[in-house]
Image 1 (cartoon, rainbow, N blue to C red):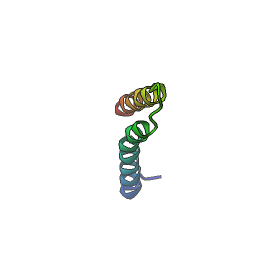
Image 2: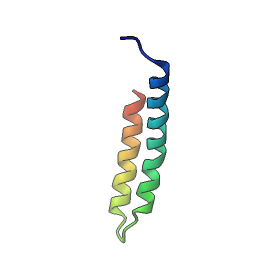
Image 3: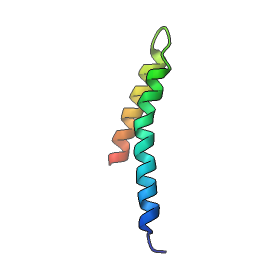
Image 4: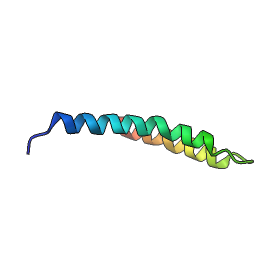
Length: 53
């Protein structure tokens, strides 16, 4: 099955938008202690690192 360039572009653009969205969601979920925000930001950075490998 050949790789379709349109499908590949769609996956890359969708992944980039999700990576941009994740820290924004974390910053909007601020709580009093900020634990949720810190965990979400750390998760987004780890997933960015894993995606680049």
